[in-house]
Image 1: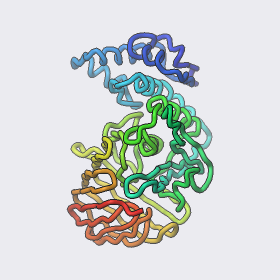
Image 2: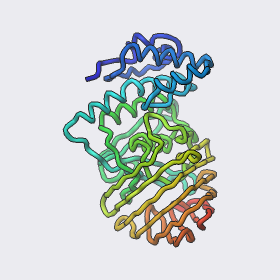
Image 3: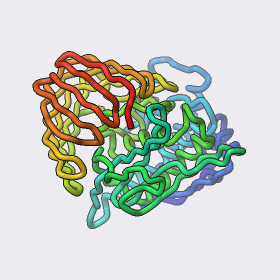
Image 4: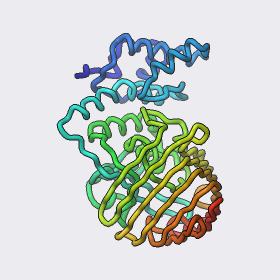
Amino acid sequence: MGRLFSTQNVEPAKTGLIHAAIESVNSEIAGLTNKTDTEIKEIADLINEKARGQNDMSYKSQWDKLRGRVMTLQVPRSCEEVLYFFTAWLIMDALEDKECSSATVEERVVKLGRKALAPPLAYHWALRVGDRWYEITSKDHQTRKNGINIFQGKIAASRAGMLGGEIVGKSTKTDEMIQIWLRLWLNRNPRYNMIRDNCQKLAYEFMVWVTNNNYLCEHRVDAASLNTLVLTDGHSPGPSKFIAKKGGNVVFHVNSQTRFVRRGLRSVGLLNLRTNGPQFTAQAVAGPGLGLFLDSTIVDASCSAGNLVGFHGGLNVNTGLGVRNGNLEAHLLGFGGKIGADGVEVNTPLGGVNLCSLM
């Protein structure tokens, strides 16, 4: 059992950068933690030391040991980020212990839903975990304050995912864990920004976290500030897989990373950089859409400017025919292309080019 804590009353952390973060953020976050006062003081001292630029080898070894499996604890650029990382470090162990001690752990399918706003430039994203959709709400034009709408149904409240959405992974996160993560995300991203802190940033970071970095999503973002090349919150960099079935869609996906290739997405405004290590996907689609697909990639790297133009290079033998995720696709041993929601794309076993979306 963990012990109760509040970000407004964590005595061992009432110093330096963490204290400033707690004092500057209005939202008080409370929960359970397994961390001792000694551990809290050590991590607080290390954050303060790191902020002052200490970087000797003994210090680095201690830092790496303490940051552990929960997160990378880099020096954040704002008080909201300090509080986000620190609180995530405090609570996630206790929540996961509580989850694992339950008699049954519910595994739920995670789906991504998209809606065209101003094609080919802008699309709204929402994420579904089980039967609940999560998405950025309408913004107050004066305060630009972010909010999150939670809606239970086949499609999101915004009408994203009108064709049912697409399977991107599975999750064992509880609703309690999700609620706390969303509150932390809002503290870290309090104001809406069309090219930085937007619906796609929420959906992508939420997807990575809720699936423990075990996801299938090849879409590029229109514009957002993202960096999933640096794993946080305990996401494993090793091989992972999932099998998911929802409606008429069945997906088996395996992905891995190598010493030299880190899987993830880096996005700054309209510019996107994505890398993938070895991965394999077998997918049968019988509504929405219809087709059979076998995607096998050894390595792949892509760059793009929003939904306008993109290029990718690597080595693949993707094979499949049908309609999935709003696209008509045809590939044989890497040769082929697709047309639809993600634009017009022509591919070879060594790479390809994509032009602006059509929907």
